[in-house]
Length: 126
Ligand SMILES: [Zn+2]
Picture 1: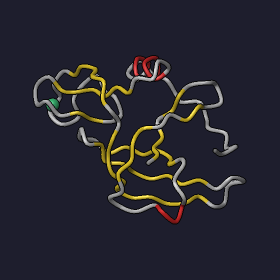
Picture 2: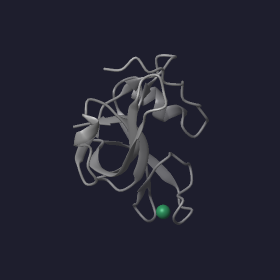
Picture 3: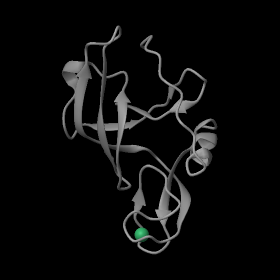
């Protein structure tokens, strides 16, 4: 939809598996094996209780927590926070949603954007 250039994600040992899975269309979150909570971004140790964590595939559905429109760029775009149905809140851009239609609480679903290096990056649409 847009000609906006998306920077390639910074891949770390903790996030490498996430980006590999993203290239196959899978959206992964880490879940704690002790307290069972999921979190974002992926961490080897649970940010809530310091327990061990495992990868799980998730749907990427949720609701908009907040949003803003970045109009100072060559190609304006919307971004904000989405609270996933599976727990964590994550920042991402919104695609395929008219700026005037964006609402807090609006249901959205994952829709990958392709970064400059070809890596799919999480974004959301309706
Ligand atoms: Zn935990």
